[in-house]
Length: 283
Image (tube, rainbow, N blue to C red):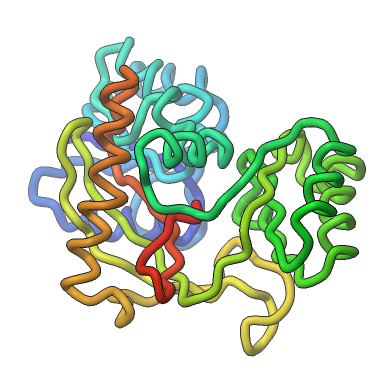
């Protein structure tokens, strides 16, 4: 089987390493790849968001299966275009990929399906966003709704910091179009964990949990980064908690997406806060 892997990060290096071990693999190609991936796959200079270029390459090289690592090409419709071309692909179509591409969409799904999450409001008007923050007070969380490479969430201990975060996203446009809409939500306390499930659109299998090192400074201080390492399994996610997450968060999301006519196929990511009231979905 000839496989095209899309992406250029550490995640794709891990995927390439594992794909290379398959006895069914005849050739592994990565677009665009990186220096590490180049040691185990043929790398081609096609950007992850060059949807037409990726589809044309897959057709020209008779690729059998495409594995998509990053969220951005999925939100841009790469899985849709590959499916239309008759090429098998691992990853959700654009409408389903909105779960990761839009925090506002995710929060609305949670509200609609009863998934436990923080209270929230979404805004495209900067003055209304500021008024909401002033009404609610601090601490509070301000998020760029769109994809911001893992950096679009600002935890605001004070009201001044919250107002500055809104300015940063909506006025100064630090995160570009990702900050045109913001989600302002409750500041939850507890221990964070990332949970993953393999989905076929109607069912899901747990891939268990991981925890990463998000904040730039020692002791979890400073702004969030795009990721500086992770470990799995996460001790905080016990077998009992894993079952609870599947029942109260993952399966309602899978069912809700299917009922909306946008079934999610691929690896479903759930960012969780584990507090005294149990797990809550934060992204």
